Image (cartoon, rainbow, N blue to C red; front, side, top):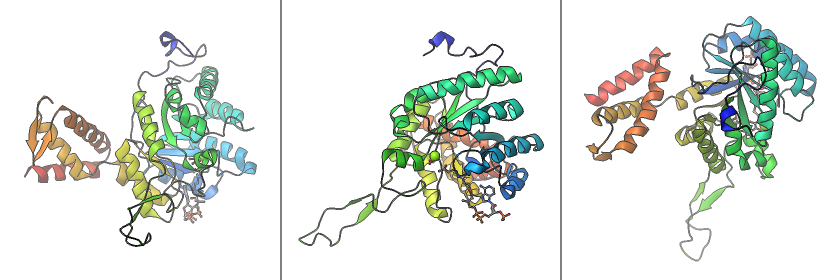
Length: 356
Ligand SMILES: CC(=O)SCCNC(=O)CCNC(=O)[C@H](O)C(C)(C)COP(=O)(O)OP(=O)(O)OC[C@H]1O[C@@H](n2cnc3c(N)ncnc32)[C@H](O)[C@@H]1OP(=O)(O)O
Ligand SMILES: CC(=O)C(=O)O
Ligand SMILES: [Mg+2]
């Protein structure tokens, strides 16, 4: 481990200074595309206008014989596209694969100035982040980059979950962590066969009401991911980085996708992955605070003055702790509204209505 005094020192001569604060532009949806898929690649310029993050995926879901095409495709797309304020991320192949070294060397050298974040899959512990950290510093120095690349880890191994706190704090490059429910389920030897979401067999049942053990007993499906998401959120918040829910694989089930995303939003996540265009608007809706919540938050903040003491609003006690929660919601809303006139108008209309 580096000493705290060295933590923000560049790891290679000539590499850019690490950032002291992780930037927090909107990242409600990380939209995945396969850069070797011509149909998806053709949609990138239009998608760039409607998503917060575009991610060129090189890892799972890209066939082994398309890995090079995906890497080269991403280079070509990055060079040819004006992404505006939309961030460009990539997911490189896993550290035990034969492709990751060429992924990192090629991408940092060719398009390091266009990439914001490098997502690293199957992270098991701080050692994986340290490896990538040093390599990126060497490549940044060689490419003459002036802005450091940030690193995002996928939480998708049992070891990764055990070590999530040290992963979150392993480097000043750490931007965030996403839940990877599919690989995590396999790593834990869970008996599911899905990509994220719930399972009807994972439930609790009300007590029996008589002799018949089957009669009148309601069951409630439980959330398979609650423990891991909550742990990830704490690890991220404690280290000043951002937590995300990952993929929801049942593309057709837009209803349950919205539920899964909302659970993550309420627990503290800032965004989720969109695997298909139909999931983009779901993530945008869920990870933008609802206008009525923003109106309420603004009302509490106004009523609380300097933020100390206690007041009653509509029968509910407000004090220093509730105004802090309201600030989280109101500040997120302001940040999103700054670049979205439609959202700004919806927030202002709800605020006006609530104070009328
Ligand atoms: C566990 C994990 O690692 S999750 C992360 C890895 N997985 C991924 O990245 C998957 C990304 N998504 C996909 O590969 C695809 O969306 C699939 C395979 C799920 C479905 O693809 P399709 O069967 O083509 O879906 P569908 O027919 O509904 O697509 C409609 C259109 O949207 C396009 N499209 C589908 N997904 C995407 C996408 N992610 N980005 C851009 N365009 C897309 C299709 O090419 C198609 O285009 P067309 O109208 O010009 O023909
Ligand atoms: C997100 C991912 O890679 C997984 O669920 O395995
Ligand atoms: Mg995975």
